[in-house]
Length: 223
Image (cartoon, rainbow, N blue to C red):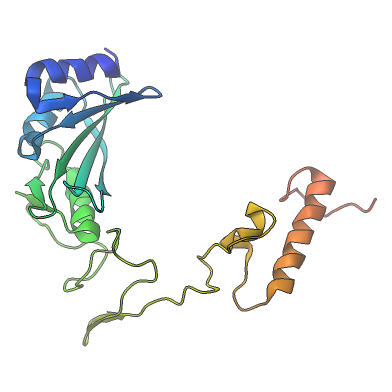
């Protein structure tokens, strides 16, 4: 059985519940129209098609569109060597869908992370607590309307957060420049000026010329 054949079997089993079977570069996706039926589809994928390994559950923020949330289940069959993705969407107003923890117990932490970072609830999860942020943190950091610099928050006696200065900071790409390398934040040191940046770029150019790679091995040999 191939991944495409597995997706077609899911479509044959659930009919109109499966809205699309898009395929891109050999990666097969199954789109479930009704999020409330996601457990039934996942049970079939595991028990009848042998997708016995839940690789991951991820979530997408379709900011500005409705439904806002898309939840993606990455499945693999360890015996048949197939992989598929099962997707379903839910509105921001609802922000809830059934947990698949009774299908794969490893869904536990995946669903907790999505709840923590996106604020999507999983009905039937036995321990839906935040897993990265602390209890009482008022925001969901992976939402697209959450600023890159973060937000200030205070929880007296427990934790706090401040915004991060972005201008000239280590995670900000510099606009302009002669190359993508000169804009790359990883080679910049915020505490120093542009002269330091240029000297680092020149050093990389020297290494490139000597070794054919900007991180070439060993010391540069004098020509």
